[in-house]
Picture (tube, one colour):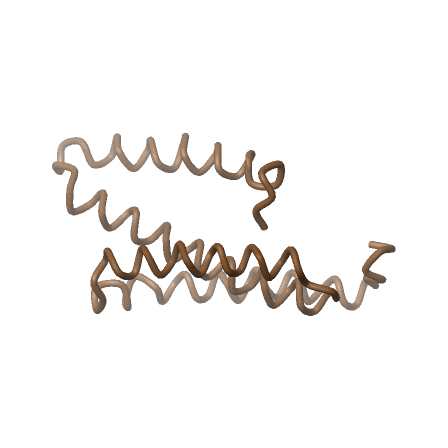
Length: 120
């Protein structure tokens, strides 16, 4: 916190960023079916890479917060797409197992390896 000169008042903006990303994740499933999933998934991965670079190159704390907000929105978009693809591809009898695998294993591993691999 000393490097970026972050004070407690400014720190609360970080919590607002994550709250606003949660609000956007509520609306994403309503908008998801309007677009082609393959193009949206490719755009989501490209956006996530650009945002990761933006976080790495951010010179000040507000820039980092803006990049983290957009990164969270891209991540939640990709997660919604993955769950929609599971719902389309996997049979109904195996859908619970597939979603459990994605939530229980894939997201956990991604959360643990996110920072050591350099992602925001």
